[in-house]
Length: 164
Image (cartoon, rainbow, N blue to C red; front, side, top):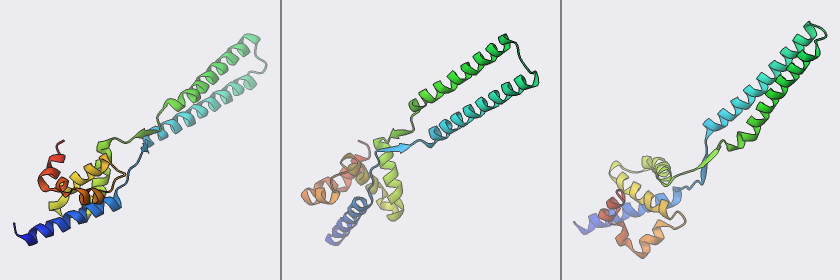
């Protein structure tokens, strides 16, 4: 290789490193919207059913006038059972996970997808390898590591990172 080509490759690598250091984002957890919607529908549906049952029971009792005590007890037990069921839904709702931790691979994909449009096609493998490095130590600047030991950033070592 000519000296000019080596310098151009180093400049491109340094630009990639700066791009990653400037745009890298680490997220601790994500909201699982499917579970939020499920919880909302569950609670909305449960409260709607409860209101409908109460209205039907009230309508039956007013339509037939004074009911015998056995019927009133039966209606009361049914209402209490329904109320217990809805309360148990509310008590168990916090067990439905609304957030979850993001995995290492998801961090790599999120950051890679965000930055891949900013680099040339031929640099995307190196971009992914550098993003993988950054995901392992997100608080440390890749530029600082490069300045300390640039042998970690040669083409062969970067490509090996893709299959670690």
